[in-house]
Length: 197
Image (cartoon, rainbow, N blue to C red; front, side, top):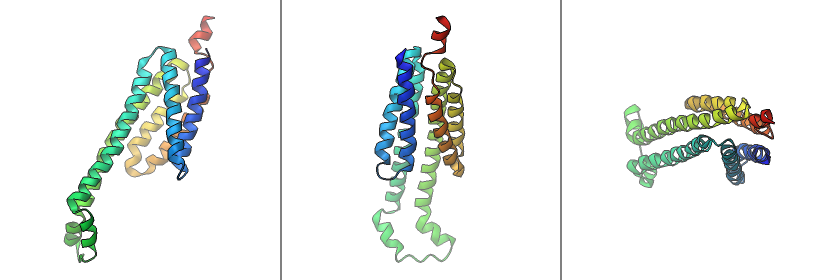
């Protein structure tokens, strides 16, 4: 069936664009969005072809939770900035006398606390998003017999867990490369179709 070969091309090119979007400044955002749309089309095609709705549902949940994590991060940081005094806080720093830990905490405590809360919330949500991505890719691996999808999901999950110590960003970058290879490794037909006839 031609649909799986289409998913192979859409998914592979989409994954490349998503990776490029994370690296290239300025036009990177546009490339990332186009890549995401192509990967969505690929995942939807595979879900439809295998008659397994969980593939697409899990991928969609991964995306939604990722958006919530990003938006939540900015909202919490904005609230912390606003609570600290907003732009007047920045102006007050010019005259602030920071002589010790007490005066430092008095001037920066709200911002540091808000950023810490935002990062922890974002981290937890990114792990949750990675769980859904892993479920989606495990199902794709199960149906297509391309185990690199399982590897991609696992490496993403490990990357999400370790982002708290920054190394996770490198691990997620590696997961994106594996994801590209996984999509281009898709067969033209589902293995079950080949074995039938």
